[in-house]
Image 1: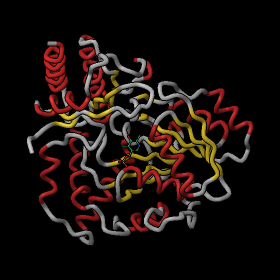
Image 2 (image 1 turned 30 degrees about the vertical axis):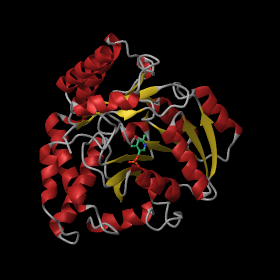
Image 3 (image 1 turned 90 degrees about the vertical axis):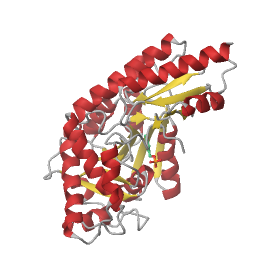
Length: 364
Ligand SMILES: *Cc1c(COP(=O)(O)O)cnc(C)c1O
């Protein structure tokens, strides 16, 4: 296989040094390994601006979706009801989970290029006092729209609702002050903006809420409360832990700190994204989400013309060292380009040069 860089929203391009951490086979029972788990948990807490007196971190095997589902199944009981805000596929996935688990839920859905409105959320909460939880996606990776977390968090605090945030594709790349916002459960995974490899997700949880979750889970392997109780003792995972991915993640955290922490990574991603949208615009390829709602993570682009063929374009770009992402919208022909991971402005310049070559050749 010819090597290429990933311009996708995760798994993403990692550094060689992160990959090299996986060359050692580690023992899950060993104290040194358990110490890695504990260190990761406390570093993630720091990134979230949270203190161990109020918050904890639980790591969960599987892809990001497993971690989201562990929250949905472990913290919302049969007596509760969740309001789910949706404007894309990951919001819809929360709804699907609610259906699988059999949760009481209500969906407030807006179009995928729109933000949910404060007045509408208030109206939902005013109309239905049974609602106890609000669940939302921060960066909706379907389009790259960045949802108004502060607004929703403010309403959740005001109404005293438990807030669940899928911050999968934003945590580590965008500063989120979990404590100040009063987020109760925030979910992300190893292979997004922290720049590790796939294998597990993590949940930053408010202790006062998590402590009440014993016995709620409808799934053994996804029981967040049990996982926390086990892991909190000494860093031992309940079931086989993804040792290679955990070691790589520890290295990725070190590298995030070396880069200057989340503010510096946010700045790099933002520069990448601005340059990408600028250059593509110059080539006549417009982005789908208005600039003021666009995240610095991933961008949805409209096809430049009617004869544009994504598969051919994809192959052309891949042959030249970059892999991009198809679109996920039903009402517009789009494709997506991620700019997170070990990606710099020179990659964006190179990519846009390749796109220019493609469009020139196609016109001939
Ligand atoms: C990547 C992602 C997920 C998790 O996807 P997996 O394929 O299960 O890792 C969930 N929500 C959002 C917003 C994501 O970007």
